[in-house]
Length: 221
Image (cartoon, rainbow, N blue to C red):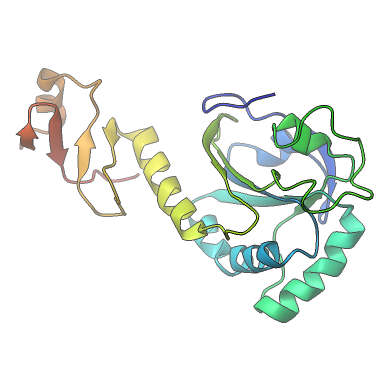
Protein backbone atom coordinates (compact mmCIF):
# COMPACT_ATOMS: atom_id res chain seq x y z
CA UNK A 1 0.00 0.00 0.00
CA UNK A 2 1.45 3.35 -1.04
CA UNK A 3 0.11 6.38 0.79
CA UNK A 4 0.12 9.78 -0.85
CA UNK A 5 -0.50 13.30 0.34
CA UNK A 6 -4.23 13.92 0.61
CA UNK A 7 -5.03 10.30 1.45
CA UNK A 8 -6.94 9.61 4.65
CA UNK A 9 -4.52 8.34 7.29
CA UNK A 10 -5.40 4.70 8.00
CA UNK A 11 -7.33 4.17 11.21
CA UNK A 12 -6.23 1.42 13.58
CA UNK A 13 -6.54 0.09 17.11
CA UNK A 14 -3.34 -0.48 19.06
CA UNK A 15 -1.85 -0.69 22.51
CA UNK A 16 0.28 2.29 23.52
CA UNK A 17 2.27 3.33 26.55
CA UNK A 18 -0.80 5.36 27.56
CA UNK A 19 -3.38 2.61 27.00
CA UNK A 20 -5.26 1.19 24.04
CA UNK A 21 -6.46 3.67 21.42
CA UNK A 22 -8.45 3.83 18.23
CA UNK A 23 -6.35 6.27 16.25
CA UNK A 24 -8.98 8.48 14.60
CA UNK A 25 -10.90 8.75 17.86
CA UNK A 26 -7.71 9.65 19.74
CA UNK A 27 -6.83 12.20 17.07
CA UNK A 28 -10.18 14.02 17.32
CA UNK A 29 -10.04 17.35 15.50
CA UNK A 30 -6.36 17.96 16.21
CA UNK A 31 -3.31 18.04 14.00
CA UNK A 32 -0.95 15.14 14.62
CA UNK A 33 2.63 14.01 14.10
CA UNK A 34 3.08 10.24 13.90
CA UNK A 35 6.74 9.21 13.78
CA UNK A 36 7.97 5.65 13.56
CA UNK A 37 10.96 3.60 14.70
CA UNK A 38 12.25 0.22 13.48
CA UNK A 39 13.11 -1.20 16.90
CA UNK A 40 13.46 -0.29 20.57
CA UNK A 41 16.91 0.46 22.00
CA UNK A 42 18.28 1.87 18.75
CA UNK A 43 20.70 4.79 19.17
CA UNK A 44 19.45 7.38 16.68
CA UNK A 45 15.83 6.82 17.69
CA UNK A 46 16.79 7.21 21.36
CA UNK A 47 17.99 10.74 20.64
CA UNK A 48 14.87 11.54 18.59
CA UNK A 49 12.39 10.38 21.22
CA UNK A 50 14.14 12.44 23.88
CA UNK A 51 14.24 15.56 21.72
CA UNK A 52 10.55 15.27 20.85
CA UNK A 53 9.76 15.09 24.57
CA UNK A 54 11.80 18.24 25.16
CA UNK A 55 10.04 20.27 22.46
CA UNK A 56 6.53 18.88 23.03
CA UNK A 57 5.34 22.27 24.37
CA UNK A 58 6.06 23.74 20.92
CA UNK A 59 3.67 21.20 19.38
CA UNK A 60 1.12 21.76 22.15
CA UNK A 61 1.01 25.49 21.37
CA UNK A 62 0.16 24.65 17.77
CA UNK A 63 -2.61 22.22 18.72
CA UNK A 64 -0.59 19.24 17.46
CA UNK A 65 -0.66 15.83 19.12
CA UNK A 66 2.46 13.66 19.06
CA UNK A 67 2.44 9.88 18.87
CA UNK A 68 5.37 7.56 18.28
CA UNK A 69 5.52 4.00 17.01
CA UNK A 70 8.11 1.28 17.39
CA UNK A 71 8.01 -2.23 15.98
CA UNK A 72 8.21 -3.86 19.41
CA UNK A 73 5.79 -4.63 22.26
CA UNK A 74 4.66 -1.89 24.65
CA UNK A 75 6.40 -3.46 27.67
CA UNK A 76 9.75 -2.96 25.96
CA UNK A 77 8.86 0.68 25.30
CA UNK A 78 8.64 1.25 29.05
CA UNK A 79 12.13 -0.14 29.57
CA UNK A 80 13.45 1.95 26.68
CA UNK A 81 11.90 5.11 28.17
CA UNK A 82 14.20 4.73 31.17
CA UNK A 83 17.26 4.75 28.89
CA UNK A 84 15.89 7.74 26.98
CA UNK A 85 15.42 9.72 30.19
CA UNK A 86 18.87 8.77 31.45
CA UNK A 87 20.75 9.63 28.25
CA UNK A 88 18.67 12.49 26.83
CA UNK A 89 17.30 14.15 29.96
CA UNK A 90 13.68 13.69 28.86
CA UNK A 91 11.46 10.61 28.83
CA UNK A 92 8.67 10.32 26.24
CA UNK A 93 5.69 12.39 27.42
CA UNK A 94 3.42 11.24 24.60
CA UNK A 95 2.07 7.78 23.69
CA UNK A 96 4.30 5.26 21.94
CA UNK A 97 2.48 2.61 19.91
CA UNK A 98 3.46 -1.01 20.30
CA UNK A 99 3.45 -2.49 16.80
CA UNK A 100 4.54 -6.00 17.67
CA UNK A 101 2.36 -7.51 14.92
CA UNK A 102 3.62 -4.88 12.42
CA UNK A 103 0.00 -4.13 11.44
CA UNK A 104 0.32 -0.35 11.67
CA UNK A 105 3.66 -0.34 9.85
CA UNK A 106 2.04 -2.28 7.02
CA UNK A 107 -1.09 -0.10 6.96
CA UNK A 108 1.11 2.98 6.50
CA UNK A 109 3.19 1.37 3.76
CA UNK A 110 6.37 1.24 5.83
CA UNK A 111 6.64 -2.54 5.51
CA UNK A 112 5.34 -4.80 2.74
CA UNK A 113 2.20 -6.83 3.30
CA UNK A 114 4.34 -9.96 2.87
CA UNK A 115 6.36 -9.19 6.01
CA UNK A 116 5.78 -11.53 8.96
CA UNK A 117 3.02 -10.69 11.44
CA UNK A 118 5.43 -10.48 14.35
CA UNK A 119 8.37 -8.32 15.34
CA UNK A 120 9.90 -11.28 17.17
CA UNK A 121 13.38 -12.05 15.85
CA UNK A 122 13.46 -9.10 13.48
CA UNK A 123 16.44 -6.75 13.58
CA UNK A 124 16.47 -2.97 13.04
CA UNK A 125 17.83 -3.65 9.56
CA UNK A 126 14.78 -5.81 8.80
CA UNK A 127 12.55 -2.87 9.75
CA UNK A 128 14.76 -0.07 8.46
CA UNK A 129 11.94 1.41 6.36
CA UNK A 130 9.98 2.15 9.55
CA UNK A 131 11.61 5.61 9.82
CA UNK A 132 8.83 7.93 8.72
CA UNK A 133 7.21 11.16 9.82
CA UNK A 134 3.53 11.68 8.99
CA UNK A 135 1.78 15.00 9.61
CA UNK A 136 -1.97 14.50 9.69
CA UNK A 137 -4.54 17.29 9.58
CA UNK A 138 -7.80 17.64 11.53
CA UNK A 139 -9.55 16.20 8.46
CA UNK A 140 -7.56 12.97 9.04
CA UNK A 141 -5.70 13.47 5.75
CA UNK A 142 -1.95 13.18 5.24
CA UNK A 143 -0.32 16.61 4.85
CA UNK A 144 3.37 15.62 4.95
CA UNK A 145 5.32 12.37 4.57
CA UNK A 146 9.05 12.25 5.32
CA UNK A 147 11.17 9.09 5.08
CA UNK A 148 14.57 8.97 6.78
CA UNK A 149 17.42 6.44 6.59
CA UNK A 150 18.63 4.61 9.68
CA UNK A 151 21.80 6.68 9.97
CA UNK A 152 20.30 10.19 9.79
CA UNK A 153 18.51 11.69 12.76
CA UNK A 154 15.33 13.57 11.99
CA UNK A 155 15.06 17.37 12.17
CA UNK A 156 11.94 18.03 14.21
CA UNK A 157 12.53 21.78 14.14
CA UNK A 158 11.89 21.49 10.39
CA UNK A 159 8.69 19.56 11.11
CA UNK A 160 7.53 22.47 13.28
CA UNK A 161 8.36 24.91 10.47
CA UNK A 162 6.34 22.86 7.99
CA UNK A 163 3.40 22.67 10.41
CA UNK A 164 3.46 26.47 10.70
CA UNK A 165 3.25 26.65 6.91
CA UNK A 166 0.52 24.01 6.69
CA UNK A 167 -1.62 25.70 9.31
CA UNK A 168 -1.18 29.12 7.73
CA UNK A 169 -1.93 27.97 4.20
CA UNK A 170 -4.95 25.97 5.40
CA UNK A 171 -6.53 29.24 6.55
CA UNK A 172 -5.28 31.66 3.90
CA UNK A 173 -4.89 31.29 0.14
CA UNK A 174 -1.15 31.75 0.19
CA UNK A 175 2.00 29.66 -0.27
CA UNK A 176 5.26 29.92 1.63
CA UNK A 177 8.55 30.39 -0.25
CA UNK A 178 11.89 28.71 0.24
CA UNK A 179 13.18 28.66 3.82
CA UNK A 180 10.07 30.50 5.03
CA UNK A 181 9.54 30.90 8.75
CA UNK A 182 6.94 32.61 10.91
CA UNK A 183 6.68 36.33 10.12
CA UNK A 184 8.30 36.16 6.68
CA UNK A 185 6.56 37.33 3.53
CA UNK A 186 4.37 34.86 1.64
CA UNK A 187 3.18 34.36 -1.93
CA UNK A 188 -0.43 34.74 -3.06
CA UNK A 189 -1.65 31.35 -4.26
CA UNK A 190 -1.91 30.84 -7.99
CA UNK A 191 -5.59 29.96 -7.61
CA UNK A 192 -6.31 33.58 -6.64
CA UNK A 193 -6.93 35.88 -9.62
CA UNK A 194 -5.48 39.39 -9.68
CA UNK A 195 -8.97 40.87 -9.32
CA UNK A 196 -9.65 38.75 -6.25
CA UNK A 197 -6.18 39.48 -4.85
CA UNK A 198 -6.89 43.22 -5.09
CA UNK A 199 -9.91 42.74 -2.82
CA UNK A 200 -7.96 40.64 -0.33
CA UNK A 201 -4.82 42.81 -0.45
CA UNK A 202 -5.97 46.37 -1.19
CA UNK A 203 -2.46 47.68 -0.50
CA UNK A 204 -1.16 45.62 -3.42
CA UNK A 205 1.83 43.31 -3.61
CA UNK A 206 5.39 43.05 -4.85
CA UNK A 207 5.64 41.27 -8.19
CA UNK A 208 9.13 40.63 -9.61
CA UNK A 209 7.33 38.48 -12.21
CA UNK A 210 3.60 38.40 -12.98
CA UNK A 211 3.28 34.93 -11.47
CA UNK A 212 5.07 35.86 -8.22
CA UNK A 213 2.92 38.05 -5.94
CA UNK A 214 4.54 38.71 -2.58
CA UNK A 215 2.63 40.03 0.45
CA UNK A 216 3.18 40.22 4.21
CA UNK A 217 2.21 37.11 6.14
CA UNK A 218 -1.48 37.27 7.12
CA UNK A 219 -2.47 36.42 10.65
CA UNK A 220 -2.59 32.69 11.23
CA UNK A 221 -5.78 33.12 13.28
